[in-house]
Image (tube, rainbow, N blue to C red; front, side):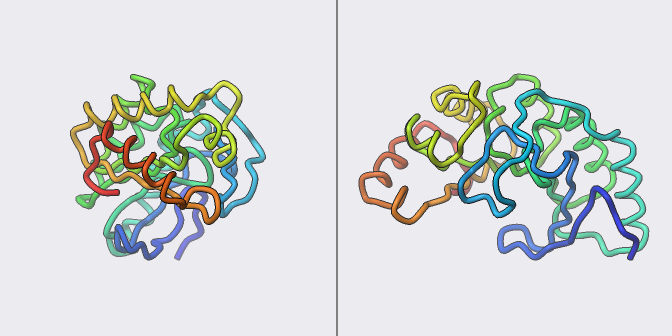
Length: 202
C-alpha cells in the first residue's frame, strides 16, 4: 500500500468498525492540551482556524486509497489535534461524502461548536462525536487545559445549541478520570449537564 500524508488506518474501532482516519491538521495543533491525550502535551496551542493543507491534496490521497483498498466501514476526520480548526472542513467533508457511501464522522473536542460557521460545515458529516470531560470551569481548566480565550460556559452553551440544531447523529464522549472525575458527586453533575444536550449515544 502507498504511504499517505493525510490518511491513516483503517484502524479497528468498537464504535465504527474499520475506520479510515483523515488528518487535515499538523500534528498536535489543538485548542486544548488535555491531561489524558494519548499524543501528549499540545505543542501548538491554536484558536484561529486555518487552511493548513489544500482540500484537493487530501481528496487526491483518498482517491488513491479507494482505488486499491476495500471501502472502510467509516471515514473519520480527526487527526492529531482538533479537526474543526481546519478552515476547509466543510469542503473536505463534502468531498469525502461524494466518494464513499459509508458514514462520515468528525471527532472533536467541541470547543468550536458554538461557531455558526463550524456548525454549518459540520452539516456535511453523518456523525459528530464531541467530548465533554469537565463539569465546571475549574475542572475544565484542570482536565482540558484549553487556550486562555476558551471558557467552559461558552463551550457548554455551544454544545447545547449545536445538539438542538444538528440533524445528524451526535455521539457524546465523556472521559472519566480516576480520582478526578469518577466520584458519585461528579457523576451527578454530569447527569445534570446532560439534560441540556440532545444526544444519540453517550
